[in-house]
Image (tube, rainbow, N blue to C red; front, side, top):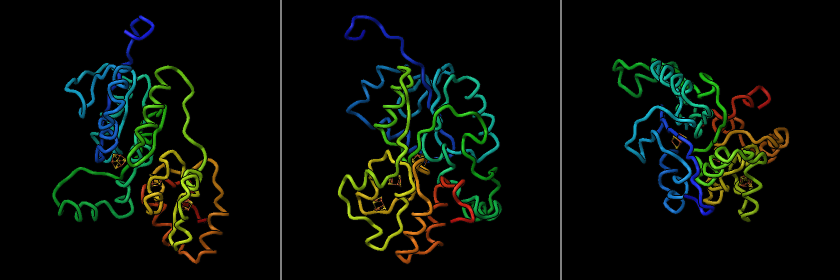
Length: 254
Ligand code: SF4
Ligand code: SF4
Ligand code: SF4
């Protein structure tokens, strides 16, 4: 019963992992300070990290991981068929993520490298929206717990839900960090969507763009900055490819 004295109907949610490290689901499960309040809003039907329930009726499906095996396609379609709202959860789900590094070499070579030529069924890594319709995307490797909570509460209460449109640099500068370009490093902060509180650059590690492209980005100015600092386009291409999150930008222009 809530503080107004009536029962609120909980929203049924399931969380499902595909090819990934499950770090995004763990982020949510580990947030002990707000987990009880958060769980009070939701009826957990299927969430391996926090519940032993394995029920297959749910309104919201959180889908973590990318698709790299034929059987995952069928499982994903079945989840889509049951969920009213499907959320691509984390960078692997939104963009293909680190799993997509294997797309850069022939699949036979990838199998040889990782599985020593054992017979495994695998295929190039695909993002969730390559297979089914996605209603919301929450990027991040891993996701930001605060952002996930805000978005889920927004969906449940039917409030407006949106991600920041500006780049990581805005948050980084607010934290008065020394810019890594001034230390000779190539950082993707100027073109990457904010929302992670500039966690990497505050820890003096260059942004690798796990949240994908910001809507308010200025690619010509970014390329000019790289040139002005004498940094290499090869390094830029490596970084843009790391999470496969900049596919639309990885054109001849870059
Ligand atoms: S996005 Fe990162 S943390 Fe999340 S499942 Fe993929 S690899 Fe793990
Ligand atoms: S370190 Fe990166 S994110 Fe921070 S201001 Fe410089 S370019 Fe932007
Ligand atoms: S700083 Fe960049 S790489 Fe690090 S979490 Fe934020 S968006 Fe991802």
